[in-house]
Each structure stands twice: as C-alpha cells, then as structure tokens.
Amino acid sequence: MIYFDNAATSWPKPPCVAEAMTQYMAEVGASPGRSGHRLAVEAARRLYDAREAVADLFHAPDPLRVVFGANVTEALNLALNGLLRPGDHVITGSMEHNAVMRPLRALERNGVQITVVPCSPDGALDPADLAAAVGPATRLIALNHASNVTGTLLPVAEAGRIARQHDLLLLVDAAQTAGAYPIDMQSDAIDLLAFTGHKSLYGPMGTGGLVIGDRVDVHLLQPLKRGGTGSRSEREEQPDFLPDLCESGTPNAVGLAGLAAGTRWVLAQGVERIRAHELALTAQLLSGLAEIPGVTVYGPRDARRQTATVSFVIAGLEHSDVGLRLDDEYAIMCRVGLHCAPAAHRTLGTFPAGTVRFGLGAFNTAVEISAALEAVATLARGRQ
Amino acid sequence: MNSESYAVILVYSTSHAMRIEKLLGKRGIGCKMIPVPRQISSDCGVCIRITRAQVEAARDTIEKAQIEIQDIARI
Image (tube, rainbow over all chains, first blue to last red; front, side):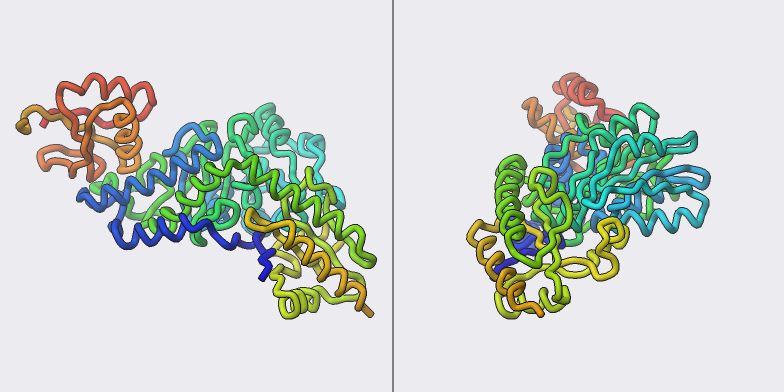
C-alpha cells in the first residue's frame, strides 16, 4: 500500500501520537481548566504542553497566544470574521483554498472589500502585486503559505514586510506547511498563523488553531463562539484575554494530547530534515513524471519552490479513472478533482476537471516514488 | 510546615497558571496547583501555592516573563 494523500491528512502517524492519546484517555481524562483536582490540573498541564510545543515550532513568543480549535478552517474563520468589519479591505491571492475564499466571499456580502491578486499559471505570486493592491482601507493580507493543489510556495516573508510597511496584519494559512516547511513568525513577520494538527504536525483530526502575534490587538478580535471557559465564572461576559477569549466549551483535550506528541515528534526530527527528505522525494517524482509521455505536471515543477504536493493529468484519461486504477491495481492512494480550491484550478487552467494529486509525507520513500512512477507510466501508455 | 507559611498566586486562567508553574519549575521554585481557597476571590478556579519565603523570587519570575496575574495573597 502506498499512501500519497498526505496533503489531505497525514498517514501513518508516529506511534507516539496514539500512545499519548491512549495515555490521556486511560490516565488523565479530566476536563482541563475547570476543576482544581489533580486530574484536572494534569489535563490543563497537557493542554499547556500542546500550546508550548506549537509556540516552539513556529517561534511564537507567548504560548498563551496559541488558540486551539477544531481545524485550520475554524482558525481562518476566527481570524477573518473576528477582525474584518464592513468597510475594511483585505488582499488575498488566486491560489487560495475555500477555507479562505468562502469566509471572504461571505464577508464581501456584508461590506468587506476584497482584492484577489492573480497568481501566475504555475501558482506563484509576485509580492509587488500585493503591494500595489494596498489602499487606504486595507487592513489585512490573507495568504496561503503553499497551495494545496500544486504545492507552490507563496512569498509570505515578503508579504509580511509589505504588511509591516503599510501597518497591516498578515494572516497565513499554513495548512500545507506547518511542520513540513520552516515557519518563523518573527522573521517571516506573520501576525496570525492558522495551522492544522492532522497534516504535517502528525496529530489527529479535529485539532488545529490560530497563533496570534503581538501586533494583533485582541480587544478588536471577536471570537467565533462564546461560553464557559473555567475563568471569570461570576461574570456573564466573555473573558477578554487569550486563550480564553477564543476557547469556549470543553476542548478536544485528547486530540490536543496527540497534537502535542506529533508536534514534539516534528521538533525532534527537525523541520529542516523532514523538508530535505520530502524535497528529495518531490524532485524524484517531478523528474520521473517529466519523462512520461502524455503526463502534464502543474505548478513550479521545481522541488525547491514547492512542498511535497504534486498535481498532474494524464492526457486522454479521466482523473477519476486514474485515481480508481491507481488504488485498485497498484494500491496507491491519492486525491483527484478540485481539492476544495476552485480559484487555484482557475489560475492553473485546470478548472473544472481538476488534477490528480500526489501528496507526499515524511513516511514516504524513494522506493514508493519509483513504484508510483511505473504505475503512472503504465496507465499513460495504455491511454486511448 | 503549616498553612500559615503559604501564599497563592492568583491568575486569570488555568493556561496562565500552567505557564507560571512551568517557569517557576525552571527556576527551582516549588509550587503546587490548588483550588482557590474559599476566602479569596479569583477569576480562575485554580491558583499556584508557593511558600511565603519564595514570594519575591516568584514575583520576579512572573514579571520578567510579562505574565499578567491578579494578585499574590497570603493564606
């Protein structure tokens, strides 16, 4: 079995993740931040460990500004809905996922102005186009760190500099990069980092969050939901401090115990090492695909300019058939179609059919890449 | 040691308490999370108990890390 669907969710996970979750269920189990007994305190400690691991990985100065939620989509919704008001202007790019596009389109109907800066046909974005889009009402730049379709890396550090120059905030969607590509909120000048736990942090689904930098005035941030936090219980108003402002209701503590273990695993491996491994596999895959007649690869076609996600089509074959045959005949699991990113596919010229996507991860090997290349070559040879 | 010799650090949330617990641990200041004693009013259900002798060292650690707390109270 060859699992090439890591861009959707990583698999397998390092064994320490399931172990941490089992241990939490068996030995901790209590609700963090509510009661004061030993198990509740231990639960709170585990939750704090998860905050600290995430803050370490992204070089965030304060673990208390790591706000957890269900996934990166929730984090992006929190940032966009929480900060933008009617009359505000926001800049984004044309390679965005619907996790950014749909909240923005909804905000647009409520009077938020949106500029979608066009990306080139390989998904790249020219920072000068971002700067040119800044106007008097611009409040935020919201940018994908890397495309979930082609893996194209977008210039977040340059976007950060532009944001600082014009006194804007930079929100980065790190769904595809958190854990797989170095991220430094300080040197990349990222004000809001939305991440998911179940991809390259190797945690379970149902975990993710928003890291809120110190340029963000939390008094201007509206939470997505309000409710019990275990703090200020005598008041009927939501606490105004982080993380409680944005974390109402009992959290997914068992999932976050897994996220902490996954993040610590990534820290122990080293993001640079994981990146080097995935870069070598991506380079091997790209050069192999380039040799196969009938195969067209989308994106930068340069491993250094992208993550370990590669999109391609085989001329004359339906993507759905390619996906089915790879699974049925070769036990290769991938994803075909639009990948929840219609804007990206319009940019690439692959809308509405989409592409076949191989999403590689830390556990894939050169042997698997070779086997997959042979399978693709066989399918391409047999096309009508 | 009787309870007369303790103080508690009162915090805004359990997350703040965890951060302080970790920092105090690193400085070798012994502490224990306890439910907030009934006679004290606090925003959060737990507080950090330390010995009175270590109040100044704890205060210094918390200030250096720029963590907002509600108060340090004798119990």
